[in-house]
Image (cartoon, rainbow, N blue to C red; front, top):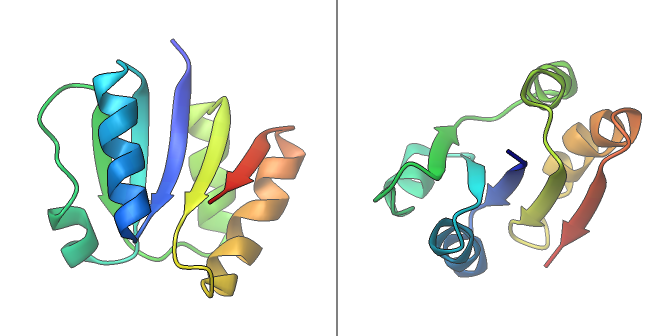
Length: 100
């Protein structure tokens, strides 16, 4: 089954997670904080929420091990540090990336 990595941290991220869940799409939702994790609804088997700040090596490992089909960035527009950590690993894995 295809799986998506969704970076959330905004209302849009929460809504995207809900949409993907209701659509039956397996999604790992990555939030920077425990608070962000707490506001993502985990009411079925399609959503897995991970919290923490990953450096580029950790991000590469996460992306490589999970074989995502798509990366979606629904974080705050000023979250430039996150952009730097996932852009190269996603490019190496030839993944499309989309931002809100």
